[in-house]
Length: 169
Picture (spheres, rainbow, N blue to C red):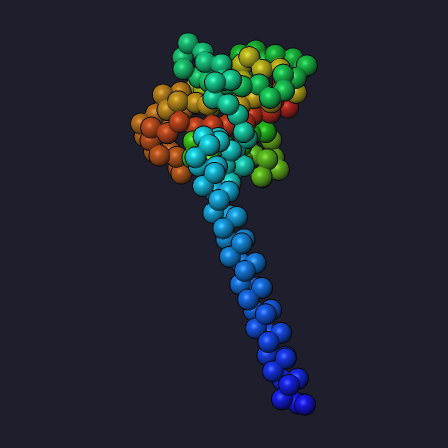
């Protein structure tokens, strides 16, 4: 009798092991399929840094080559050159890797518009926003940091920022 119960227990343990292995394999396959599908559908969303999803054909392009897309236009004041603006931002490389974020630090970033205190793509991109607005900026390297490395940013990098204009002072 004890032998039967031990054999039955071993069969149950083996069944549980097989079930656990099947669940693990299913999860691995699902993750692999999800990553493969994102890479092959042209999705601009990224697992690496929560880059917002956008369709590149929806981007407006300025004469300088700056591209932008308004997620929310806002209804506050437009900033003028010489005014201080307060923004929250997150920056990504085009591969979706996040490199900086005032949101993560919990402290808005302030700068004086039009004085060269920030990269040219920021001056141009923020100048046409309204307070309360949120905009995606795709900044080519010549409007960013150019050909030189700057901290974690390799020279020649196109940068993507989500900028929320909090206040115009």
